[in-house]
Length: 50
Image (tube, rainbow, N blue to C red; front, side):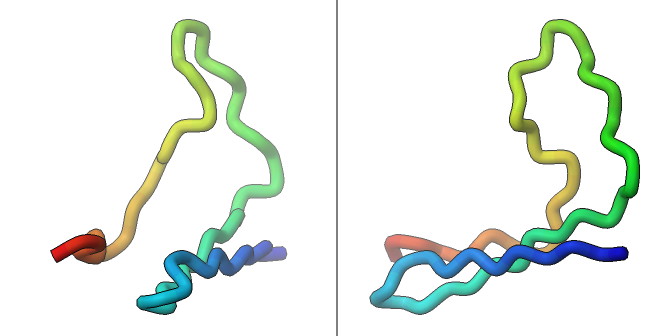
C-alpha cells in the first residue's frame, strides 16, 4: 500500500508537495544521525523568493 500526504505551502503562490511512504517496514535507526532526514528528492527545488 502506498501512503500519500499532500503539503500545501505558501498561500500566495499555491505550491502543493506530495510526500509518500512506500516501504512497509521502517529503516533501522542509525546511531549519530539526527532525524528526520531526507532520503530521496525528485525534481528541482522551486524558487521561493525571486
